[in-house]
Amino acid sequence: RDFCLSRGLGDVYKRQLLDRDKASQSMPIFDHYGILESKKCTKCHKRQAADNFSNRKAGIGGKTSWCKKCTLANLKKWLAEKKKNEQT
Picture (cartoon, rainbow, N blue to C red):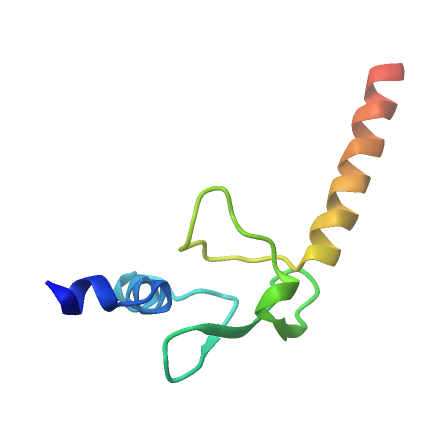
């Protein structure tokens, strides 16, 4: 029981990545404790530190992952298009 409680979320994340049919496109890299160090943004394709990515509301396990910069740029574009469509 203590062993199960001591496992980190990184271990859970790694296990989820290994258990799926299709691997994550973000190619995550973990340290030897199972903590996420970096991954590749599936929008701009740049490898970045883990703290450059937002936490997903859906939790761990998405196959794609956008960095904060790409997420913000996409949100601004989406809001501008929404505003344009509301005016017509």
